[in-house]
Image (cartoon, rainbow, N blue to C red; front, side):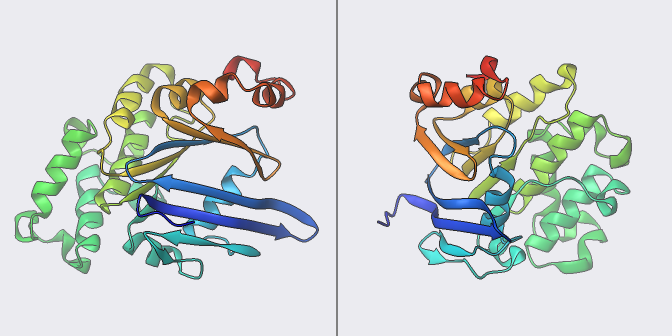
Length: 255
């Protein structure tokens, strides 16, 4: 059943790879302003589900609805234009640019200014102002003129989220933001994630349970491609089925 409060809805999603069911009739609703976490042991199907939501993979069955519109057949870039953005590892193109250049490029592309991003930034419809906001918001001002490949790993992850926010998403799929970040660089990243704009609905995919439980207001547990349960953090932490799943995978400390 559709609700105006639901911004993103996966309905009965199935993904088959040969004889393997990677996603098994998954239904998940992301509400406006959500802080929703998708968790599960390794091999649970989290990445497959995110690839279905973002259009990297096509579902074998089911549909995906974004703000009331069926987007099941849309290409990834069309979903971004509709307001659903996923954080992604910085590719080699961005590696050779500075954070300022990267964000100027992204903001300009998003605003339809195309390849003119390299022109004096002040000429592009508020591009310079938006870049300055993002650099400050993501603690990148001091390193804005450093080549991205030379940044500390935590700063690179911050830049990944800044790139996603530069696309002005209404739905943000936050894909393991603290994965591989050294302990000394985590706090800045955790604080930044906590301070994401309230009007952006966030689906967090994460193994780090400290982040999950500090961030999420609602959680969905995926096991073997199937939704095991969904609820608020207290309900999930005290669910014996969830404990059993994680105990069985040597992850008892996480729940």
